[in-house]
Image (cartoon, rainbow, N blue to C red; front, side):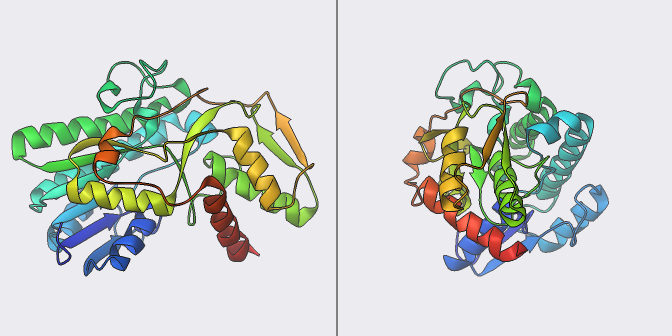
Length: 307
């Protein structure tokens, strides 16, 4: 990937897309084009094909998606599947029509089978079983994108990479208490409780374990994959934390210790998820931000944005 290449980022105002845009521009890429829902409705096949063929990008980073957390996925199975399959199908097909050299597609760790065939999870395991029921429709839609990339390489020679992400967090996430992912949902809860003098109710018992990666590190990893990676690549920090560790860190950062309640009746999600990062490490990636540093920056951004 050359600094003069035309690079299109879909979902360019969201969590990952906006971080990738900022990172690429900071690194000196001169022709980075970000589009969001306001610029083009990627559910509309005609509009998507017109926009992408007119832009004729050399590279596409496709981050646009209909994204929920655990509860959101459970309550919106059909919508999540339909919209994500439609968006991904339209963008990948348009990339082929536009003569794009390479497309890098944002996936999710939810694509892996449950129970896990082995731990840590390896990229070749994705189609070895059904995904966790709590995220099944979203995961199957994301799997369909991977299958489409393989088919378009076979028939059209489209070069691609597919990013399988751990739990990501940072600025411009979906800070939705009910339907958001774990970190943004927690930050919104902590902020509301701090402003109202209330308490924070946390879903589950805090025992579930995840790899969390700050979005600025995620953007660095994605640039490496866009430039040098091929096929499916896991991304993560390589460190596993309990949800309780994240909650305790946020409580210290926000001075909310002692104002926590755990609701064990709510779902934990998958109990343990860890990723083999050999392919990512081979590209020279090492995370720079600790969990606490990333949470601090995210909390400060949210506090300053919503106060």
